[in-house]
Amino acid sequence: ESTSSPRVSYEVAYTWASTKTQIFLGSSLEDFLRFDLSTKIGVRQGLGDIGIVSLEVIGSPTPTKVWSDPYQIGVDRQDTDRESAGARLRWDKVLGTELELRVSSKKTDIDDEFSGVALGLSSADRALLNRDGSINKFDLAYRFKFENLIIIPRLSLIDDDLDGAAMAHDRIQAEVSVAGKVNKLRYVTNLTLSQSDFDEVNPIYGVKDESDQIGFSFTLFWDKAFGTKWIASAGIVAYEDRHEIDFYDTKATGITVAMLRRF
Image (cartoon, rainbow, N blue to C red; front, side, top):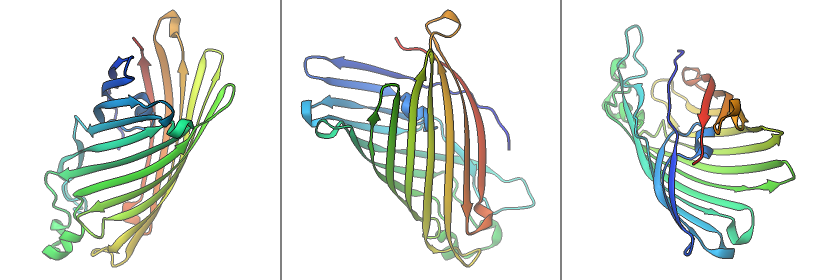
């Protein structure tokens, strides 16, 4: 499928300089570059040499559309909403270093979860395909700074603790982000590699799934674009997910164009 989708990304913050406390609402540019379009509200607190600690409540203001029964073939599938909400704890500049730690937990809920109904599966087998549940994530990153270059490697452990045991899986993910500047142009590139192992045998295909994912994105920023105070950006993204079960194989490519402004 091909589609286009307008998005608005923003963050509003208020800081008490005397206490180094900040409250914020919106979606950060950092998340936007990772194509995480969730909205967050929270508080950040500077703790001197200890670092900066923030607590965020995160959610998606616009539900994601998914198939109610993805295994239905030969007819038009019915879509339904997938909603998610949770919390994230972040500790940046740990003990005065460039280390960053994050822990998050997010609950996902599909309005009409009818996976496997069209195939006439038993209720026990359909339960194995249930996509509701929670996603728990722990990651750590370190920021290496050079004159005109920043390199951030990140390692993540992710537990997709879904209600359906054939859908639930553990994931390990490695990512490296590189940001640089050339005259008025800045760029950010991300490369992500991950591997997933699923918990139980899939009742449709009779094997336990596993998958390997690779993702790449490159975004270019133009400061004071066209003589204005705005920042223009354009980017590309590519993603591929290869499974032991071919039905779940996924490929995606995208192009982004945006205008940004800081006030």
